[in-house]
View 1 (cartoon, rainbow, N blue to C red):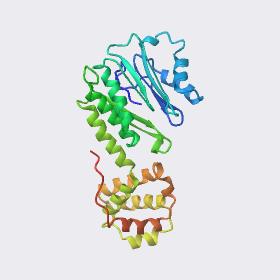
View 2: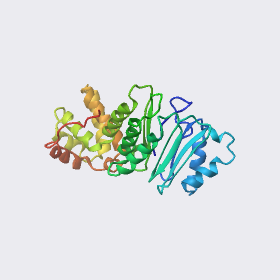
View 3: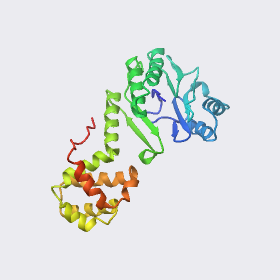
Length: 283
């Protein structure tokens, strides 16, 4: 779901809510804070997008100031744009997506956004959403210009249950959002981090000694012990930072690897380093 954040609460996605296994709700214009959770509760109860939105709007005295998009786990989308939101205002739902905005350059903004999302189904979701947003902004976006952009994913197989990247008060918010998405991907790329850590650490340690002393530890235990030993030995900051990232990724990204015996990891790491070409770019 893509949405242009034209809000009266700078820096916040007012009332928006996303939950893996339930769906996504984005709110803007003067939608009251907390409304997204109201819709989400209905999605969690198994209501389809349109029914969840219609039910939540009932009894909302200021609904004509609201603008809301909803996508459920079946890919059904629904949207509402109140008559008291600012022109140009409107929304469009598509396959597994919805786009909406007010104070936009025109209808082409939402139609282009939805079209870009629907035709880029070969991309992974974060890239697909960002590409759709970029297309919408290229079609005119917010007619006042833009200073902020947000990308928010909720997925059970992602570290910490999701990904939230936000840019505020930036001259080129989508350019910065794409850069930060690259940084986030790098931070969650366990394989690349492990190889980069190996490249930095091998000149500092003796692999045979490490295997002898730590081979029977789990990978998590060995990484923690290495961090303590290298900190005491005043190892370069880069090495310590990489080990901290490896430890975080073992906890949040690859807990399956955390319990693997370290004696299995070191030889595989040494073999992999033969074809390692350097760290991924985060920009």
